[in-house]
Image (cartoon, rainbow, N blue to C red; front, side, top):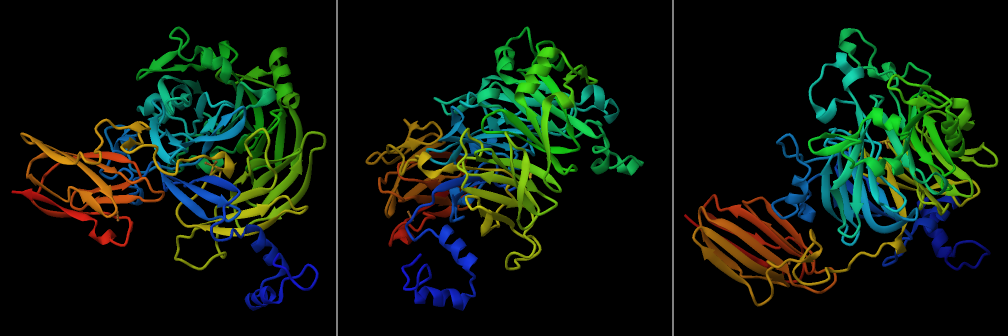
Length: 628
Ligand code: CUK
Ligand code: CUA
């Protein structure tokens, strides 16, 4: 608080501001908790998926300011991502069926972990729309790799990582025949499947190694959110599912619509997978099948090798979340007002004792009563659970517009519900998926904003609400309009665990290889070389000119253009826009890029710098002259 004359109050001038703006005492407290002074820093960074924007957003906490959008599956001109420059090759990795895929639906970001704790090095994100996973390097907050699930064109339950990030796991969702090939819905039970992918992560290379990755076949139950075990449950993973009915829809033919067809049974199946054991055989040709060169473990092998078990879970579950101590898996049923707590220890005893009976695919379903330790009625529409440390958990209540706070471990009970506005999907707690959550902030990622913001037309932003959960009775302390994409999940990392570069380490840096590009244009070596119809250009950029400034070529030339920002100053980014050729680059200090094109049209094209980099930024331009 600003020093006031009256005990504990605001100084008269601050009080005048509060009075003039009609702020209550709670408003003032919320403002003081979330205000970060000019030039100050946030304590945490939240990485929120951007839904069908195909991006990821880095957001400061507690200020709730967007610090950066990270283009992943969708081209973004501001970052020069996927528009003419070298990052087109990153996007192209995700193409399939002979099509350029230029959008994605990001759902579940996963920060890399070391010993179950976020280490701030990498971020992984899935694309539900195409069954893809991307790797973002947190050295420069840029997307480095996209891998395509060879078995499935859709995913959902990932990404999540094993406690030391040896594996990035991509969980499935809607079932389809292997590789997305055709099969009639009449053959649903026999042919349609889910495929969970185990992507091997090579931390040294900063890439997923497809040659060491594999999949596992699962029944067509619509696997949903997954989480990986930790500490006591290390080596195992858990995925909910929501269509044990194996409904195939067809409202147009008089069948029950999916919304009721997949919700007729009282129980669905929590999938319990021994991932550690699976990784021992995932690349073993005698233990696996293969599709398009990628091995996968069949259901039969998974059953025979004790890799896959199930437990019943109440109606239409959504989230499956492992407690920080690894002892329990928490499941929320969308159509069940309870959270259900499963004990990992009990699962292991049930597995060892041989209890349970097989599902139609021969997978042993453990008896519900043997593995469940508690059920708490928390409210309507429970979806996702997060943890606050010390046996405290929070579950989003979509239908109740609230977050339930409850305790687990010694006593399982509902403590209170905290209203949020409105229709909360995921929630994210500070360091919430680690072995030691911080218990101070929680963000409610609300699907509907309705009446919370200025009307900006019929497409509304989402409403991200920051809650102070260190209070005895947690409260919303900030509403952030998320007007650039619908976040599904988010993870929140302590800001001081992130250590990104300020500028690229050396001049001529290729962010794709994270090394100096041997072909990079270097200061003093700028030139244009012609070899027949092939023209190669080495250009540098520094405040406030390109060298060379004018480039003369001929129609039909094959052009290879290298350009390097040779600045060493913090924040001295230059853009490079080449009108008429669909090229836009963002060149951060030190960064080198190469792009190629065929000079299709004669004419004069004014290229220019798109970042207002200096007082003479407008002079930072040049001519591409293409002779007829
Ligand atoms: S899902 Cu979106 S609210 Cu994709 Cu994690 Cu639950
Ligand atoms: Cu460089 Cu503007």
